[in-house]
Image (cartoon, rainbow, N blue to C red; front, side):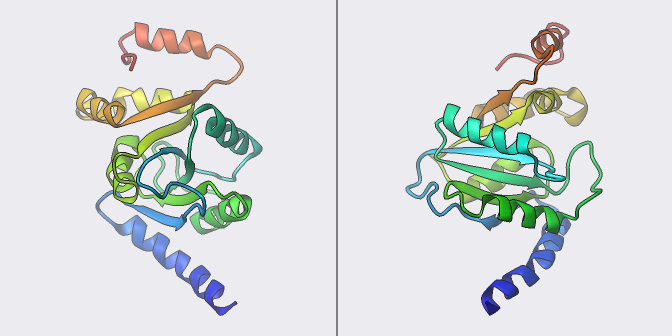
Length: 194
């Protein structure tokens, strides 16, 4: 039991170190025991604030795993979300909740990112999962709209070309008018289909 306690004691220090880093980085908290090992396969990446993890998160992860033919899914806590302050549960508590939720799932890895932009996650992800492993981001409809939003980029076209050149997106819709909103978004020059 001493080993488990030592690891838990290190988590707050690891989180603080990650948050202070200037370069984009990912802390791998749990590697899937039956995930990608042979340097090939499809990695699903589900970034969110997980405050707290919800049944909707779990349903989206499960469905994406089946529909996307994913070999492993990384549940990625955003330590620096784009439009949200860290309120509610601490980052450490969120990671503990994720570990408890997925402790028996052999294809789920858990990590924490210190950057909110998806394009900034690519380099640290590639260090953990080198080519030819392919990346598939799992997002909700509201998130894909944020990914495409001009306000987050100085050189939006170059950033999105890099992002969509290196990964795919599985986008979950919600009941409602997402299709109309998406078509309106692209029709008004807000983005371009990929």
